[in-house]
Figure 1 (spheres, rainbow, N blue to C red):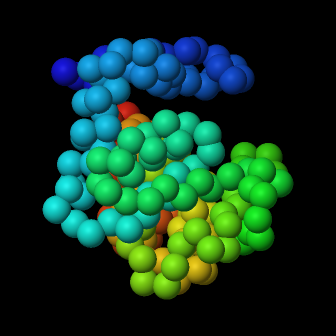
Figure 2 (figure 1 turned 180 degrees about the vertical axis):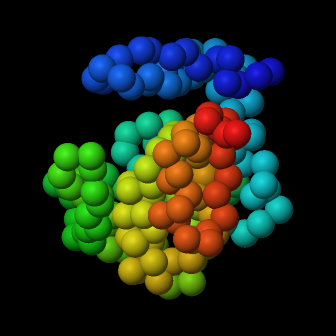
Length: 173
């Protein structure tokens, strides 16, 4: 199955000039969703992965089944004020300002191997904040995993020499 064909484009959303990659059409098809989760997990099936750290909110969609498939725990990375216990925070740049992600202080332990998971890699800002959260608690970022990568935005450049696994890449030459 060609997973890219399961994603629809929404022109001028959320604002004029943007072509939004709508993954809800992929998620609505059980066979496509299963294939997507399998493809996200494939490179890591023979590795020890302790935690899947996934970003709010669409990262949760893929992070939970990946954690089950890989026998790992799941760590939600949330917007500020959404987690009930003590948190650590990391900020990142947006087109017009900044935002933050938070994680419980006890979510990742020293030396644990972690996959960071989200639905989309664009500019790399959110992923960079996720790396910071995991590494400040002593976790080891094994890789960053995305269903979709907008390669023309060069988000990989912000992620250093870490492994990046994306299933679908748009804008590659």
